Image (cartoon, rainbow, N blue to C red; front, side):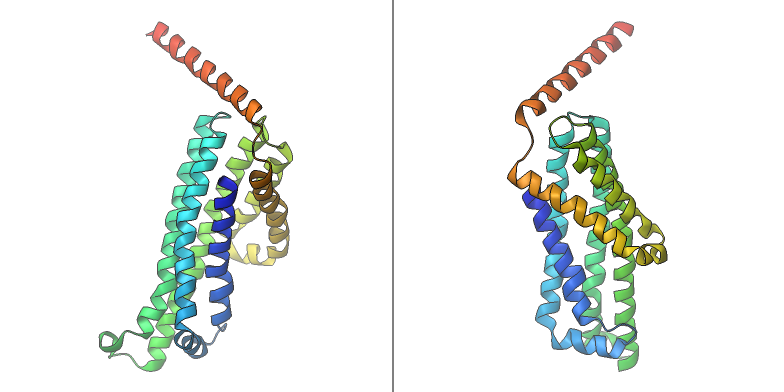
Amino acid sequence: MAGVFEALEGAGSSNGQVFILGSLVVTGDAAATAHNILANEALFRLGFLLSVAGVAFHLAWSLLMYQLLKPVNSTIAALAVFVVLICCAMQALTAFFYLAPLLVLQGGHALSGLTAAQTESLAFVFLKLNGAAFQLDLVFFGLWCILTGYLIWRSTFLPRILGALLMIDGVGWTLYVWPPLAVYLFPVIAVASGLAEIPLQLWLIIFGANSKRWHEQAGTAARSSATSTRLHETAV
């Protein structure tokens, strides 16, 4: 299930925010971009719906990964969930900025005080905000990848190489905290992403976790927690 939702999130977010929006935006040309959005409104709205769906799929994916990995370290797994909640909030904000240009371009009487050129420029500004929010979303996603990769590395029921690759992938995405550097290194980041996220997705869908080892590690974690509780009660 985690692998399926990872695939759905990737398809939704990439198609909405990258491919569809990228096909409509003309770099540095607000008028041409506005024309493309209005001429392809149905496609533009589809990209928005895919972006919103990506938020829901991301939440489901991350919560399933929490259930899978909490026997390794429940504290770090919970921290990963906290980080991904911030990530999903940024993802939702990105979707809002995605839709804003269409609302501006179709503002009608509400924006009657602006010229056509000013309206197109305002819509273009919202697209730039969309891009900035998306880059910040990638930073938090990178942090989640680092934490989750560490948990996979420490687990006994998933291949450790998947954890190592996911941590490297996460470091790459966190470089978007300084976008010029990330854009310059994007080919490297893209390769790291492909080598980490696609194998993890396929492994989860095809092979899943080693059930016997998962239960063994979960039992060890439960016994350790029970021992800590008894020691605390004794101390009190």
